[in-house]
Length: 189
Image (cartoon, rainbow, N blue to C red; front, side, top):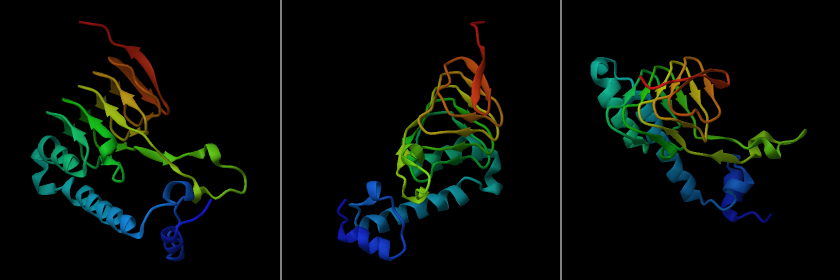
């Protein structure tokens, strides 16, 4: 694969980018992306956890900060303390109305593609897979849970605390565990 001058410059500066993903990126693109990530990191670190505003943080300030980051956030959303959206890919997060995300959850939209990783390979050169995370209307993500890329959590579904969600959760179910598995289908009242 032929490498561009920009790629060679970035490599000479010690920036180790995946050739498949960043081979044609310009130095300006890297600077732009760096400032975007710095802005997002600042908003996540300081905008989401303003202690003196804690009574209104969860329903007013945090959803607004998520929107500033680039997430699509509906109405009447609850985002708990120290919930971390994917700061590199916030536009891939969709949170519908009345979703409840409890404290210390992580929502990820990217992960390394391990399909091309073999003994003796360089993990840092593997490309990223980027996929949307969609939290449907009225679902609940329990405390300390992690939602992985490409997952849709259905309407009214409940994910128990400390769960690792690697696959879609159907609507109106309860799931928990690592990896999360459906343990109950909810019936109409």
